[in-house]
Image 1 (cartoon, one colour):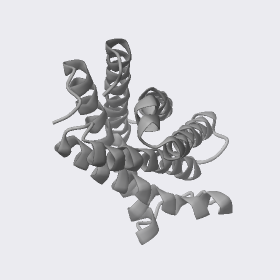
Image 2 (cartoon, helix red, strand yellow):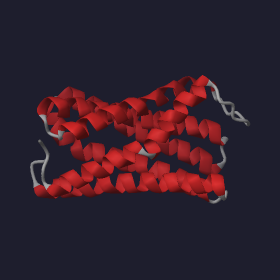
Image 3 (cartoon, helix red, strand yellow):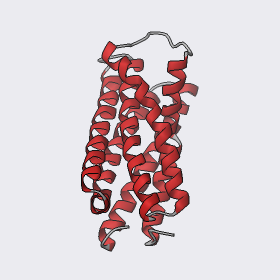
Image 4 (tube, rainbow, N blue to C red):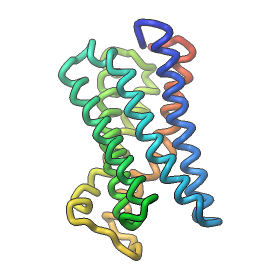
Length: 204
């Protein structure tokens, strides 16, 4: 997928690290609900770190995307970076206590939704140039679509919504579905990508 082995190996380990940190965040949130703090804070740290690693990964994959579509690749990279910033802001809000967990979660899920848009762009190009195996490209497409459900949280951010109690509404169900995606299937996809890059095989 890359022009040289060094970049491919580096991107592979960044992808694996992204997935591993994401799954660690999943473990911490499970422990939060079963035990309590400090696992919530540890989950927030993992969410922010995985988002930053996602932006790094997007930057490392950028040369390949740029070769296929320069303008499109620039847009998706900018979206991924902005998404990482929003997700990191969500982690900061939760850890610092500047806002409640609800508003912080809206920032985080919106950030990952933007990362999902980057993933959709990657999947779209991979399906056309076969730079990824078909199954992995489809997995990226599905993962990206679910992540982008988090875009429904944007109005809540602008309204400063920060509920003290959680109610299972359609709105909450949608953004929680996106949250489950960045805790589960997105890390899984990252690890699969990393293994692929380490194997040195980028196509079918």
